[in-house]
Image (cartoon, rainbow, N blue to C red):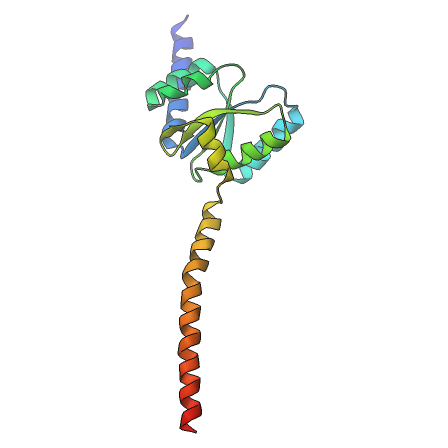
Length: 167
């Protein structure tokens, strides 16, 4: 192998390592059997959520995962492999890929990494069913505002009662 080829492969490993290091999550999938139209649709859904999906050679992924500290992912790099990386929302790739896999038998989730930890397939499926960050914040805001509304109504009732006695 020439020095030029070695340099190209080393660069590919470094780029993949950097993507692992910068990602909040990286979900590994087998896309074998999807049509071009289905892959295009999947990539569009992922892109809208700020997630990028790349097909990377298994050997490159294996070396990059080792360099990034995710050696346990090596078992997932078998057969046709694509990785969905998200730098922002840790569960967005899991949600989108799980939903897509449920309606397309050809897409199979293999494993991945979420917030710096290797996640099993069961954990990824659990993340996929969780509400989004925005939904959780909305639930929290609602839960916090309900007691405040009750206190405001009680104070208003006391004030109205006080006005009625003064008249």
